[in-house]
Length: 303
Image 1 (cartoon, one colour):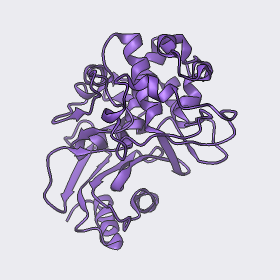
Image 2: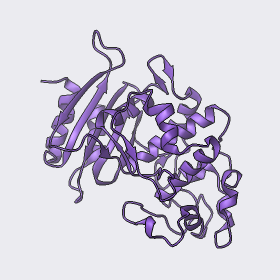
Image 3: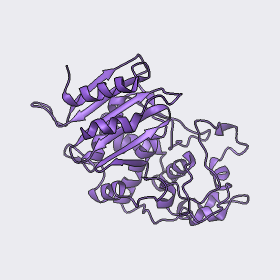
Image 4: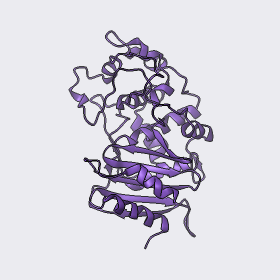
């Protein structure tokens, strides 16, 4: 028998009928006697690779890079994309992209006519190997605040901004600033043909390491005695301006009071109870939408 928390999460998997869909579930909560950071439990439901695709959960992780640069005074939510990427707004692109703010980008409020899903669209087949040219060619057809247009491309653009500022790709930056300090193991991130990190998806992690992201959220950027990002960024990240169409921003959604989550295609996710400092992370492959994923585990967190 595990903890009451883990037992509740296992029961949730059974309630969803997910025994043959989930690969693994990991919980983190307050450390027991003799433990330093947290008490971790893991249950495997079916065999899988050590690292799994997090799909769009990667967006919430990419947002941490923005927070670190915010703390260093190098990036602000109010900064316009043209400040960093003006050289990619060439002939054939819509110059309105350059006027968009990072805040609008991370909330999928660009005003673009349509978004792109890199998991369903093979961008490697685009005629132009520079993905920014194709993304910026999508017309801005409405006021950015009028509607929500979800796009993996927005977090690819964020990754390119990180690269412009730091001189290193998003994956390498996150390895240095987050993944290595948090003790990640067996991880990789998809890239385009020019070596730029995809950002919005294609991040492969162990479920244990995905859970650590939630623990970072729950502790306002602290990892033990080490600060990864500031409380100021934590407040921005958690208390983003709510969207009237989708309660989503900066890669996370708010499932209930004090509970935030990042989710991805086919049922991946990490949920954090910010009040009780409890986290659950899970990987699965649910192509038919049989499980209730984030919402189901959120109910378990509230119990």
